Image 1 (spheres, one colour):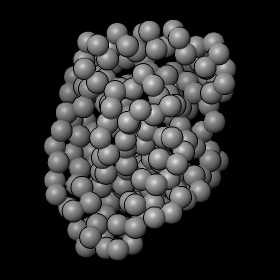
Image 2 (spheres, rainbow, N blue to C red):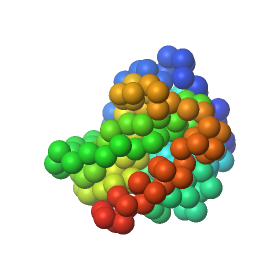
Image 3 (cartoon, rainbow, N blue to C red):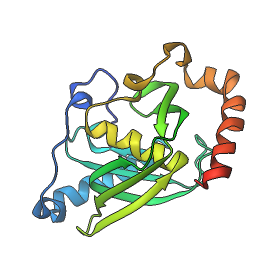
Length: 190
Protein backbone atom coordinates (compact mmCIF):
# COMPACT_ATOMS: atom_id res chain seq x y z
CA UNK A 1 0.00 0.00 0.00
CA UNK A 2 1.07 3.55 -0.69
CA UNK A 3 -0.18 7.03 0.07
CA UNK A 4 -0.81 8.67 -3.28
CA UNK A 5 -0.82 12.40 -4.03
CA UNK A 6 -4.35 13.86 -3.93
CA UNK A 7 -5.13 15.95 -7.01
CA UNK A 8 -6.31 19.50 -6.32
CA UNK A 9 -9.04 21.55 -7.96
CA UNK A 10 -7.89 22.63 -11.40
CA UNK A 11 -6.40 19.25 -12.34
CA UNK A 12 -8.21 17.96 -15.46
CA UNK A 13 -8.64 14.39 -14.15
CA UNK A 14 -10.96 15.74 -11.44
CA UNK A 15 -13.27 16.98 -14.20
CA UNK A 16 -13.28 13.73 -16.18
CA UNK A 17 -16.08 11.17 -16.08
CA UNK A 18 -14.65 7.95 -14.68
CA UNK A 19 -15.20 4.75 -16.62
CA UNK A 20 -16.83 1.62 -15.17
CA UNK A 21 -14.67 -1.40 -14.44
CA UNK A 22 -15.30 -4.86 -15.90
CA UNK A 23 -15.40 -7.99 -13.73
CA UNK A 24 -11.90 -8.94 -14.89
CA UNK A 25 -10.59 -5.47 -14.06
CA UNK A 26 -12.13 -5.53 -10.57
CA UNK A 27 -10.28 -8.77 -9.80
CA UNK A 28 -6.97 -7.55 -11.28
CA UNK A 29 -3.95 -6.91 -9.08
CA UNK A 30 -3.79 -3.34 -10.43
CA UNK A 31 -7.31 -2.45 -9.24
CA UNK A 32 -6.84 -4.25 -5.93
CA UNK A 33 -3.64 -2.24 -5.39
CA UNK A 34 -5.48 0.97 -6.35
CA UNK A 35 -8.14 0.19 -3.73
CA UNK A 36 -5.51 -0.46 -1.06
CA UNK A 37 -3.74 2.78 -1.96
CA UNK A 38 -7.02 4.73 -1.86
CA UNK A 39 -7.79 3.42 1.63
CA UNK A 40 -4.29 4.29 2.80
CA UNK A 41 -4.48 7.76 1.22
CA UNK A 42 -7.92 8.52 2.68
CA UNK A 43 -6.81 7.47 6.15
CA UNK A 44 -3.54 9.41 5.93
CA UNK A 45 -5.45 12.59 4.95
CA UNK A 46 -8.19 12.05 7.59
CA UNK A 47 -10.83 12.01 4.86
CA UNK A 48 -14.30 10.51 5.10
CA UNK A 49 -13.98 9.22 1.55
CA UNK A 50 -12.01 9.47 -1.66
CA UNK A 51 -12.72 8.72 -5.30
CA UNK A 52 -10.24 7.13 -7.71
CA UNK A 53 -9.99 10.21 -9.89
CA UNK A 54 -8.79 12.18 -6.84
CA UNK A 55 -5.65 10.03 -6.97
CA UNK A 56 -5.36 10.26 -10.75
CA UNK A 57 -7.26 7.16 -11.87
CA UNK A 58 -10.43 7.87 -13.87
CA UNK A 59 -12.22 4.64 -12.92
CA UNK A 60 -15.45 4.24 -10.94
CA UNK A 61 -14.14 3.34 -7.49
CA UNK A 62 -14.74 5.10 -4.18
CA UNK A 63 -13.78 4.29 -0.61
CA UNK A 64 -15.39 5.67 2.54
CA UNK A 65 -14.78 5.30 6.25
CA UNK A 66 -15.54 7.33 9.36
CA UNK A 67 -14.22 6.04 12.67
CA UNK A 68 -13.50 8.78 15.20
CA UNK A 69 -12.22 11.07 12.46
CA UNK A 70 -10.84 14.31 13.97
CA UNK A 71 -11.94 16.29 10.90
CA UNK A 72 -15.54 15.11 11.24
CA UNK A 73 -16.39 14.55 14.92
CA UNK A 74 -20.11 15.07 14.16
CA UNK A 75 -20.31 12.37 11.45
CA UNK A 76 -21.83 9.00 12.25
CA UNK A 77 -19.53 6.00 11.91
CA UNK A 78 -19.16 4.49 8.44
CA UNK A 79 -17.37 1.14 8.34
CA UNK A 80 -14.75 0.83 5.62
CA UNK A 81 -16.73 0.65 2.39
CA UNK A 82 -15.21 0.05 -1.02
CA UNK A 83 -17.64 0.65 -3.87
CA UNK A 84 -16.88 -0.24 -7.48
CA UNK A 85 -19.19 1.12 -10.18
CA UNK A 86 -21.50 2.75 -7.59
CA UNK A 87 -24.87 4.20 -8.51
CA UNK A 88 -26.80 6.50 -6.17
CA UNK A 89 -30.50 7.23 -6.56
CA UNK A 90 -32.67 9.39 -4.34
CA UNK A 91 -35.58 7.66 -2.63
CA UNK A 92 -37.69 10.80 -2.18
CA UNK A 93 -37.58 14.60 -2.46
CA UNK A 94 -36.40 15.29 1.11
CA UNK A 95 -33.17 17.30 1.13
CA UNK A 96 -30.97 19.03 3.69
CA UNK A 97 -28.20 21.60 3.55
CA UNK A 98 -24.82 20.06 4.30
CA UNK A 99 -21.60 21.96 4.87
CA UNK A 100 -19.04 19.99 2.89
CA UNK A 101 -15.31 19.95 2.43
CA UNK A 102 -13.11 17.93 0.12
CA UNK A 103 -9.57 16.59 0.08
CA UNK A 104 -9.22 18.09 -3.42
CA UNK A 105 -10.65 21.53 -2.59
CA UNK A 106 -9.24 23.65 0.28
CA UNK A 107 -12.67 25.10 1.06
CA UNK A 108 -15.98 24.24 2.70
CA UNK A 109 -19.43 25.30 1.56
CA UNK A 110 -23.14 24.57 1.81
CA UNK A 111 -24.57 21.99 -0.57
CA UNK A 112 -28.09 20.60 -0.78
CA UNK A 113 -28.14 16.79 -0.57
CA UNK A 114 -30.85 14.14 -0.53
CA UNK A 115 -31.60 12.72 2.92
CA UNK A 116 -32.49 9.21 1.71
CA UNK A 117 -30.68 7.38 -1.09
CA UNK A 118 -30.31 3.86 -2.41
CA UNK A 119 -26.83 2.77 -3.46
CA UNK A 120 -25.92 -0.08 -5.79
CA UNK A 121 -22.30 -1.14 -6.13
CA UNK A 122 -19.83 -4.00 -6.34
CA UNK A 123 -17.28 -4.68 -3.63
CA UNK A 124 -13.62 -5.61 -4.32
CA UNK A 125 -14.64 -9.27 -4.61
CA UNK A 126 -17.19 -8.40 -7.30
CA UNK A 127 -20.20 -9.07 -5.05
CA UNK A 128 -23.27 -6.89 -5.61
CA UNK A 129 -24.64 -4.63 -2.86
CA UNK A 130 -27.93 -2.75 -2.66
CA UNK A 131 -28.26 -0.54 0.42
CA UNK A 132 -30.14 2.47 1.76
CA UNK A 133 -28.16 5.36 3.22
CA UNK A 134 -29.57 8.31 5.16
CA UNK A 135 -28.48 11.72 6.38
CA UNK A 136 -24.75 12.47 6.49
CA UNK A 137 -23.89 8.99 5.23
CA UNK A 138 -26.16 9.59 2.22
CA UNK A 139 -24.39 12.91 1.66
CA UNK A 140 -21.00 11.19 1.72
CA UNK A 141 -22.19 8.74 -0.94
CA UNK A 142 -23.48 11.60 -3.10
CA UNK A 143 -20.28 13.63 -2.68
CA UNK A 144 -17.98 10.74 -3.62
CA UNK A 145 -20.13 9.60 -6.56
CA UNK A 146 -20.19 13.18 -7.86
CA UNK A 147 -16.41 12.93 -8.16
CA UNK A 148 -16.83 9.98 -10.53
CA UNK A 149 -18.86 12.24 -12.82
CA UNK A 150 -16.30 15.05 -12.72
CA UNK A 151 -18.42 17.14 -10.33
CA UNK A 152 -16.88 18.89 -7.31
CA UNK A 153 -18.94 20.05 -4.35
CA UNK A 154 -18.19 23.68 -5.24
CA UNK A 155 -20.23 23.12 -8.43
CA UNK A 156 -23.27 22.43 -6.24
CA UNK A 157 -22.84 25.40 -3.88
CA UNK A 158 -25.89 27.59 -4.58
CA UNK A 159 -24.71 30.48 -2.42
CA UNK A 160 -21.00 31.25 -2.83
CA UNK A 161 -21.06 33.38 0.32
CA UNK A 162 -21.14 30.08 2.28
CA UNK A 163 -17.65 29.18 1.04
CA UNK A 164 -14.92 29.37 3.66
CA UNK A 165 -11.54 27.94 4.46
CA UNK A 166 -11.37 25.10 6.97
CA UNK A 167 -9.96 27.49 9.57
CA UNK A 168 -12.74 30.05 9.15
CA UNK A 169 -15.37 27.31 9.22
CA UNK A 170 -13.98 26.05 12.53
CA UNK A 171 -13.79 29.57 13.98
CA UNK A 172 -17.12 30.97 12.74
CA UNK A 173 -19.53 28.34 11.42
CA UNK A 174 -18.79 24.97 12.99
CA UNK A 175 -20.89 25.31 16.16
CA UNK A 176 -24.06 26.35 14.30
CA UNK A 177 -23.56 23.65 11.67
CA UNK A 178 -22.96 20.89 14.24
CA UNK A 179 -26.07 21.93 16.17
CA UNK A 180 -28.19 21.88 13.00
CA UNK A 181 -26.73 18.64 11.64
CA UNK A 182 -27.00 16.84 14.99
CA UNK A 183 -30.77 17.30 14.82
CA UNK A 184 -30.78 15.56 11.41
CA UNK A 185 -28.55 12.74 12.65
CA UNK A 186 -30.81 12.25 15.69
CA UNK A 187 -33.88 12.15 13.41
CA UNK A 188 -32.64 9.83 10.64
CA UNK A 189 -30.00 7.87 12.50
CA UNK A 190 -26.96 8.53 10.30
